[in-house]
Amino acid sequence: MMGEETQSLHLDEGLSIKKEEFGQAEGKMNQVEDEKPEEVEEEDEEEDEEALPHSEFLDIFEEGLARLVQDPLLCDLPIQVTLEEVNSQVALEYGQAMTVRVCKADGEVMPIVVVQNAMVLDLKKAIQRFMELKQQREGGVKHVSWGYVWRTFHLVFQGEKLDDDKMKLKDYGIRNRDEVTFMKRLRKK
Image: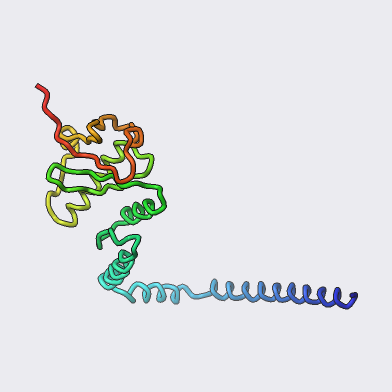
């Protein structure tokens, strides 16, 4: 028994010696890197910058993004996807967000993603963002007066107008995949 204790003591000492030696070697390596001449550092940075032209970098990025969008989780997203759209899709997958289907008068259905505890104002902002991205991708109207849009149209869920911007969608009874109608306001005379 006494021999076993001595042997383990030697093993522990051996490990501590190796750790010390490693620490010293690491310190020497850091010292050598610190002593690197500034000219060599500048050359390395210039080589990195010159290594890949911007257009080639964009091509590589777009190829990677196209492969990423082929993932079953992200396959519903357009090829020119934004970070906001990816984050929304991931939040949907984790149950942190919901899709509200907004129906326009022309029959078009817009799948709008909002967080679970979103207010009516959040839904309106998400609709604006959705339309802006759609117009950028398809080309079309450059500017929309959203003040005019919200004065002229309102959102309706099961016959109830969503008038209070600060009220949560849950309070109106809106859940994931529910349909909200984008309806023209009737003029008051």
